[in-house]
Length: 293
Length: 323
Image 1 (cartoon, each protein chain N blue to C red):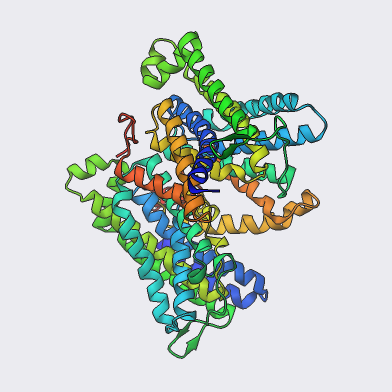
Image 2 (image 1 turned 180 degrees about the vertical axis):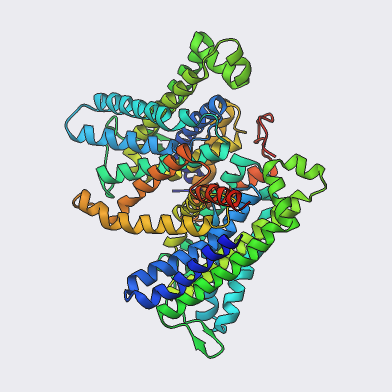
């Protein structure tokens, strides 16, 4: 393969990976802005979604049914987690809350280990067929599904935020939690909604990526960290910033892995995170949101 | 005050006598590990409990100390004492370098930055094959020798580690009671107010960070001499979380907290390693991490101020009685 088509091939992989990071980042950013909680357990929702769907599909359920049931279960679980562990500590310091989400992340990962063990679980691709050839490179059908998921999620969120009363209430919470409360928006409902929504988006993202990467009990942790990097690149305050951050990180990572070193690709994301936090804590495109420095 | 001295004398005496009574190398090994973790958590406790700054990357300093000893003694044949000093100095230096930009960050962002640093160093341990030996690590580290004394048996190492803990504890007790200690607590309560009172908050936070990094490095160096083998696995993110757990469970900002926290968490880990396979047949010891997670959440929900504060309350009432 000549260099230009190789670079194009890497770009397609980068966009696929970046789309997943975008979804994680937008779930994180939404939750963070509504509740003030940086949910370090977000990655575990992806792992649980993927593992559940793989098991259901292996049990003979059609893929669509496995998808719906797995997403519903993870949504329930994330809502439950919010009620049990986050809501009771709503008045606590940011440090307490972040330690709680780390504890949740460890517990959920342990739970997945207990149920599924350490072996990777496979999920069949959503549609069978040869990859599309574009400009000397190929793009897998599963990647197209992932792009589709991002598009549908963004369209859905846009419709929710712009067209529904609940969505407007969420936006009001994002802009100013205290003021939203003063005009009668219940922050408890919003917090529950944010976590359940993050769970649903996370589970869907996990299921969509599973045919490419396989599902393992510990896939969530690094994905969650990458989601933060993407959210930090986007400045932690805007959904569009988070999506763009995810795409940028995905592309950077794939080029780095393909051209420099695949062993150090995770290190790259962390270096990017440190660089963004230290040099430009408001993100590459974000306005200054909250107190960071 | 007298009551306090009495209590601590009894505790110290117990530490002196216990290894002579127990004949189990396993228990001795567990107590050595508790001692090493106590050293790390004392440093982390200064950072979190007094300066009010969090670190989710302290396993990196622990690992840097261990690898410093491993590399200097095996590849460069340094004398063991020199290597141990380097294991304190190098992590301290790294902490000084990353500390200034990192400590400018607040709460969540500081947590994220230290977390990223910790995972980054762990990846470098795994990937730096020619220097660190990659995932299989470095072997045949010599025993630590101090003058003519060679720490080649667990019981000698036990006394070395706990003497170190005692010396550091006394030093820290002095520090906390001093002007520096009060200034650090002022930072924890309100950075702005501290700054207004003329406290060099950035400088002090950095000093606390470097101190805690150096202590974790010292523990890492001792660890390398104790197990004579170093690989990346004990220095991952999970270890960093465990150190924070120990600091929090023990009670932030309390004198006995680090010892209590390290003791409770390590003992719990060992008990779970033994008990979980009994309750869930076929389950390996690794499932204990579920319980660690659950305990971490419960402690933060029910008693975010940690167990050590129970002792503090007890102490306060005792003081009142004396009055």
